[in-house]
Length: 633
Image 1 (cartoon, helix red, strand yellow):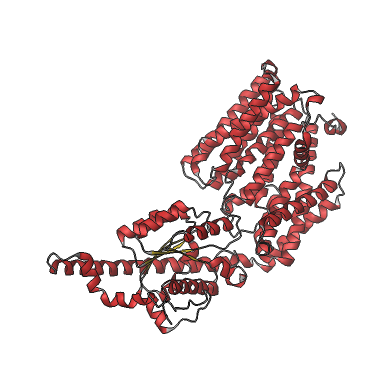
Image 2 (tube, rainbow, N blue to C red; image 1 turned 45 degrees about the vertical axis):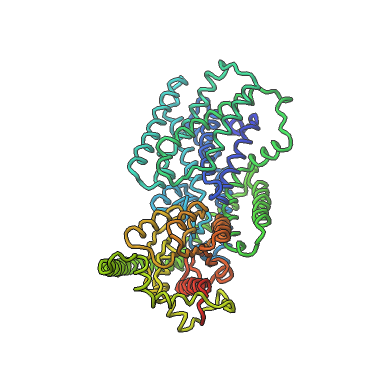
């Protein structure tokens, strides 16, 4: 078999191209709007299954060693040149204009070029699902690495099994390999290993590829025996499509349980969809395969899906780094991203879709990647160093919080005991009246908030606190629940409010807030006010916020909004703002508005405040409390 025979044009399957385009749109939507479309990553299963199906279809014949090597070369030469080219250009731009992006991305470039980025990310502990503060342009290219690995595995199987002529034997052997991969995934999921080990693992993801191969062999041998009308086929395809689409709105990739059974079921359904789409397309003649303008657009996208896939996340990171604070109109913001992806994708298609590519378009970018990695080693990873310092401060804060919380707990316990003793000494006295009487001086001081109607609220960013204002916040007690952002603010808040009890944890989200606050209430007792700094990790739904208000028992609750580069930031902040409008005891501390145009107050991850920012964050909290309580200067 010669090169001409291997590269000859085959029949174009437009419906499969449309499916590829829809899968691309789903993954891209997930990258952009993970909070609203959390299961979009599932479309990767479709890419893997379609690859197995189509590769088996186009290689369903005896292949000599020469054929195999030629086929591998052909496939790799279609995939890697545009990736290496775009990585080189991206690293050059980031080195000149965005050092943090360069620091995060350089280490992935050669791993992607040599097709082991998925393995590198497992070893590095990099999460595909938590990209907050991570500017790695190439984090999505783990899929390219795993796909190229599957190509080699596919042709290795062809080489080993080239004397097997029976499709039934092939199906049986592939089924054993599939079961082995599924079994390993299930085993690891039950061992509660890090999710990235399963998600990025070549051995745990390859069963989708094997299933694609199996379903093609099933179609080849048994598809003709399925007597189904064209109308019925269309209905089946539509129903399977809906079954695959709906989970994308609620499946969470960080839930270990989905890797036990859901992934298997989803993969089976996706392969059934491919099977029936293929059968439907083969049952239609040329006149019946009318695509319409919508179908034609999707076929166009599908034909360029590789380039769009590479570009989409790269463009997204650059936009979020440089432009997220510039465009208040998100339609324009995201519309420009799409326009750039289409424009750059068309350029890439024009350059790299040709049969012969200038070797310098491959050689020079590849050498550039090596040079960029040498530069990265020489200048050091500035972001990594600064994040290490932030982590050190974070760990120190955690230790200090633990000590201070114990002291606050003991203080509250003594106060409660004293209150109980006083209650025993007062025969049949009402407990609430006793507390009120015993704390009359403290209440009188706090009643400064009931100021006259001529009280003038200070600007929210006026941090010139008077002695009277400082005395007020010094005497109030605070119960705070937060994520990693609040942990690093602890000592700055405590300088103002020594009676602070803070429960913070990395990655904590608003749904965890009610349970944590209830635990504080039960075990420690709530302070005069409640401070909630959650939302940096995904949500601020009204149900959880209302639960927090209910637990607070009429206390003022201060919600701090969030500032970072993730797509859900605006939604979280909008939800918080809407909630406090309808709840007089709920108050918004607008950290986002304050820090939006002050990037110098943020660490290099653009999420956590640096030292100066931490002080500003604490100042903002104090000013809001003083204004809400109408404390006079």
